[in-house]
Image 1 (cartoon, one colour):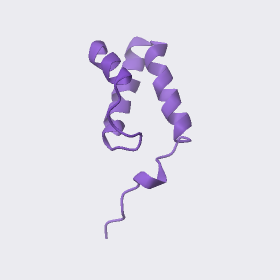
Image 2 (cartoon, helix red, strand yellow; image 1 turned 90 degrees about the vertical axis):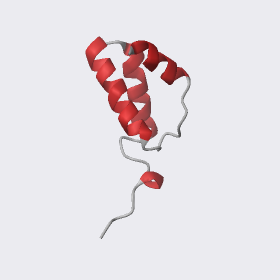
Image 3 (tube, one colour; image 1 turned 45 degrees about the vertical axis):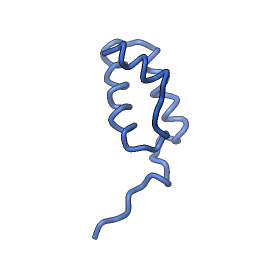
Length: 65
């Protein structure tokens, strides 16, 4: 799993607010928790800083009534 994760971190395919990054960032966070590696903790911190800890307003879904 870490081989695939290392490759994906070096070859990002989607914009930061793409929905796939929600699942991806959860996986990166889980890898960081499991391994304790700063290599996986740093991207989590970077994303949190880039988004100010909040979802990007351009990425919010419309309210469904």
